[in-house]
Image (cartoon, rainbow, N blue to C red; front, top):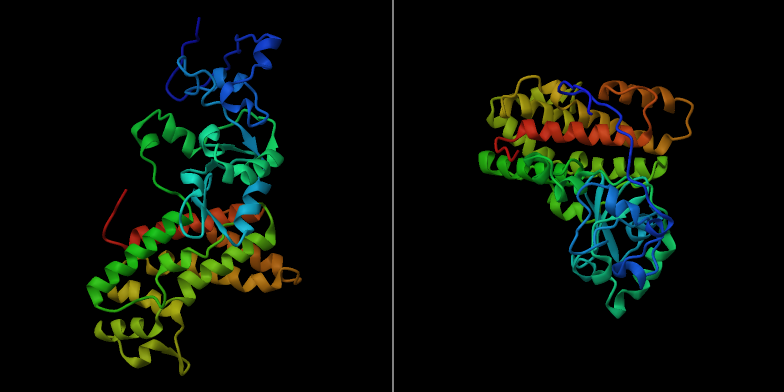
Length: 338
């Protein structure tokens, strides 16, 4: 008999499902010819996977992250993360590998594709060998945005928006379009969608890789700003040339953007809003000083401004910054898509 529970309470329920040796070593026809290792028990224990009419079809197969590193570093391929836990592989011409090579990324990441179909063609054999080389044992953990979208427990699970750079690039594009419509000027030098084609997301907890991503994001969101356009808008808003200078020097792009958010968009708390972009700029400067004695102090200052502990990992810093930049552009645009 289950204990009496209140909303939000949890209890341990012992697993009563007993497997025989035959069950544990069971093979499914969908995967047998592909020679992947997997745990057939996942098919029966993990909610939403078992199909009585198609036994084993959704059994997860796990791969090491070195597979992502290979495709992300290859000049002919690009890896796109639609969330911090879901990636898609594309060839440079934007045609997905054989139509649907999608992977859900975790500590070891499991697949979100039909392996039987996607590796059937002869031209996919080299990819199959690479996947076989990166195949690792199941860790039985597949909960992710992708899993919840396929097995929704609520409407919000079924219709999820991106939570990472993909979302950030989209919001930045909306902001640029709204600014063009309102003020008749281009706020960026290069369209963010073009720049994002060359973006390589960090995959591992590896400092140089993560700081290289900071460098790219700084180019896209700060160095890409049209300072002259911002000045024109601010003059139209009633500011004078001397208001756009400090100590006889022209204000830089971030200071101009702060004034634009205040005087052009009439937003309150503008200094606080634009804070994540100043943190991004500081992280970009740290990229070339990873071994300096002052690095840790300056890095901790960035963490403090992001509101995260000093013990946060580099990947934690990256995710926190992206999350706050998403919030910034959500607050800047009038059109809301959530």
